[in-house]
Length: 306
Image 1 (cartoon, rainbow, N blue to C red):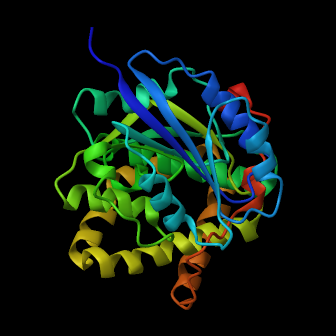
Image 2 (cartoon, rainbow, N blue to C red; image 1 turned 120 degrees about the horizontal axis):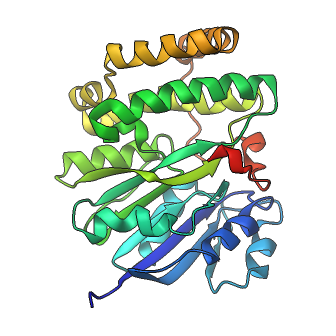
């Protein structure tokens, strides 16, 4: 019988009290066929809500680190890596839900089979409630379809910080220098340094989209501005090559959604161009942890999101 791999699960947390208990319950229900969890680490980055108390109440054995000074997401992830010695590191955002009991099993499978060093899952947006959330939901479908077609999902756009699995070879070397665009940083670091990246379509994680313009604006501006920061780290050529989108794939997905949801799709396009234009005039990037409060309420997972 093949030896089971050891897995460390790391959860960066900043004001995650509304959901972290639900996520920990989801983790406790995971079926472990080819691995075992050697450690579960939560790092609270000066949370001002009940995140720490909720984590302490959990029946799962875990290592809880509470920062006394706010350090930002990149530093928190580096702290998790510092305390990780297992074969695989799985980083999960605290504001997600996992319905599939074999999620981690599916996520780490390419690493077990020595096909990859960085693996990401597919994402499922919760059913929208507000008008703005509905517009984002339609846009997410456009992007997800396009992104998963490009190189079979092996591209910078599918590498989201929501959930990632790292081989020991990779996490032992990587150090996150920035919080803005740290997910794209992990992808670019992976391909630049000869590691293998993999996208797993049947491993799905659930999250909620921002419900209002203010929260969406925070996320979008950081995404647009992160490309400029990453150019300084990896060079203009690599960024241009990896952020280039095949127009044919994008247009086909866009036209399909314009036919199905003309008003919501048109509304999103207007918002997109407005924020893109605005990003050219903003240089004050906060490298700490700028959160979208409305997307953290994910405790009521709807089955139809899957």
